[in-house]
Amino acid sequence: SQQGEEDPQALSIQEGENATMNCSYKTSINNLQWYRQNSGRGLVHLILIRSNEREKHSGRLRVTLDTSKKSSSLLITASRAADTASYFCATGLGYNNNDMRFGAGTRLTVKP
Amino acid sequence: KAGVTQTPRYLIKTRGQQVTLSCSPISGHRSVSWYQQTPGQGLQFLFEYFSETQRNKGNFPGRFSGRQFSNSRSEMNVSTLELGDSALYLCASSLGTATYEQYFGPGTRLTVT
Image (cartoon, rainbow over all chains, first blue to last red; front, side):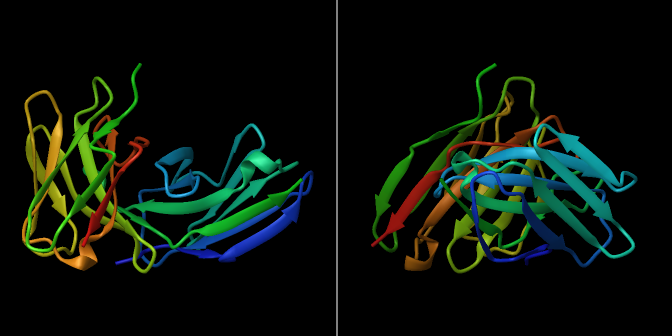
């Protein structure tokens, strides 16, 4: 069953703009991870944020986590056409296993 | 370091047949997880293996099974294929616990006719 739900389902922006995607989940988590997928290919890991962290940065990516609201956001700054992809959040439920539940994803299109 | 590899990349089978997919994790990774991705259901967790033992299992019928070898390579088997089994099957490896990132392979695209 799905755990996370991304919002919006689709997002279209111009190159240079910022893109914000949100993820909500239902149960307590150990960590939350964001992945990118290009057109039915494998997923690329972007950022992992642990439940005791509130914000994390990696290059043009910024992830926030609010465990009280059971939500996370992914911000991509100064977007590029190459950022066009589907973005998924995944929640890690267990501490000793990799049972991860993915949301349905946000389809981001960055127009040149 | 080589990434996660999956073989074959594409596969076409007919209903009722069985199929075996293979996944080789990143060197040193002991955990291998399998996921099924379809347009309708999205990414769904199948099962995870760690040190040759199944640690967790998703909500899939018994036709879906797997195993892991001593070198951490993993295979997934689907018996009595159904049309609905057509999907992209992804495997992911990690060092071992949910506090580590999972690294995904390119996937095996299975088409059942």
